[in-house]
Image (cartoon, rainbow, N blue to C red; front, side):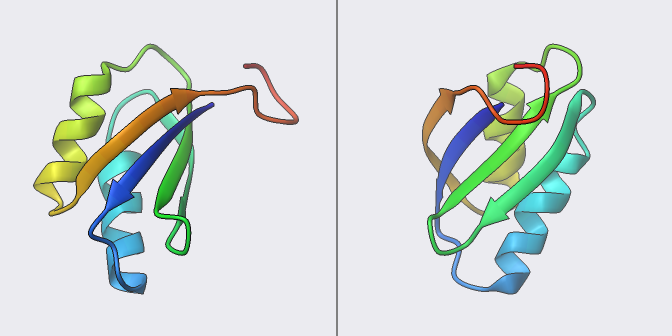
Length: 77
């Protein structure tokens, strides 16, 4: 699983915009965006360039402030 910190989100519309931006990337699945934490998590089904993720979020109008990989529960990691 990948987790990214995102700044600039303030409402449900923001969550929907980030979710949509991530879901449109080939190889990204299981997208969850947490407004309160300012984070998005997702699983890669095939390798994804981190720059593509950052660019899509920026194009949606938000900033990526951090990235990390972690072992999720209930699946391959």
